[in-house]
Image (tube, rainbow, N blue to C red; front, side):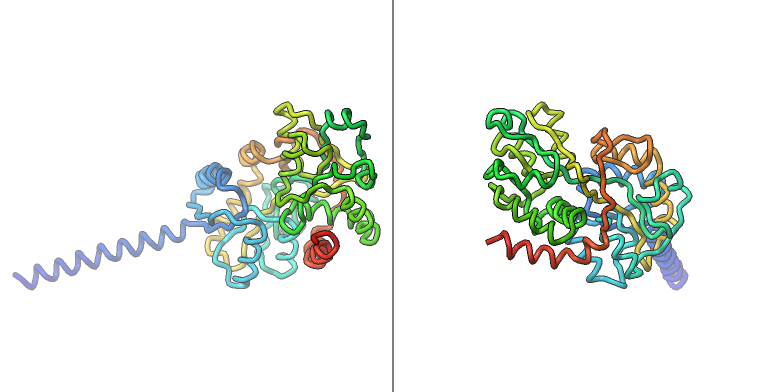
Length: 332
C-alpha cells in the first residue's frame, strides 16, 4: 500500500513538473524580446497595443539612449540577446544592414509607405521621423532690430554675436544631425567654415537638443538650433517664437525597426513589423511624435519641411572623426 502511495505521489509530482516545463516553454515561445531607445512613457502605451495585435508578450528593455543601445548591439554581435530593435536611429539601421545583423522581411503591410522610409530588401523599416530646425524669438528680433535668418549661412552674420544658442554635438543627436546636414549640403570645407562663423556668435552650447528651444522661448537668446517638436510644441503654448527651416533644407532622422539575426520568435517579430505599419499603430505613434511615415496620418508637426537627401551611412561612418574635430576646434 505504501509503495502504491509513493508511486502515485511520484507520478503526480512528475506530471506537475512536466506541466510547468511545458507551460514555461510555451510562454518562452510566446515572448518577443525588444531593444529600444523609445521613452518609457511611449512604450507603456505602444507595447500593450502591439501585444494585443500580434498575440505575444513583449519584453522590452529599459530605455537606453541611442548610443547606449547601439553599443550594446555592437557588443553582443552576432549573438544578440533580443529579437527585434523597435526604435533606433536610421544610420544605425543602415550600418547594421551592411554588417548583416538583421533578418530581411518583405512585409506586405508596408506597401503604402514611401520607398525612402524603408529598406528595399526589407532589412529595416522607418515608422516616424523628426528634423533639425532653427528657432527665433520674434520679440527679441524686433527689440534688438535683428534680421530673421532664412538660411544656414545667415547664422554666421556678426549681428547675432552672443545671441545664438546651439546644442553640443558631442552629447546631442540633434546637434550632430545639424552638423552632418551642413557637411552634406555645403561640403566639409565650407561646412567647417560655416560652423566656425556660427561659433563666433554662440553664447552657449547646451547638452540637449531641446534646451536651445527652451532658452529662446524664455527670451534668453534670440536665435537657436533645436529640433521640430521642441520648437513647435512651444509655439502652440503661445511663446513668442517661430520655427525656421533653412532655405537649403534640413536633415531628418528616421526612427526604425529591424529583426535581429538569431531571432527566436520570428513569427511574432514579423507580426510586429506588420502592425507598426498599420493605421492603428501610426496614429498611436503620431500622438507623441513629429511625423509618421504612413501617408494620411498626422504627427505633432502638421506641415511638410524641406528635407535634404540625407546620407545616414556617411554620417554614421564619419561621426567619430567629425566630433573629434569639432571638440578640438570649439570645445576649449
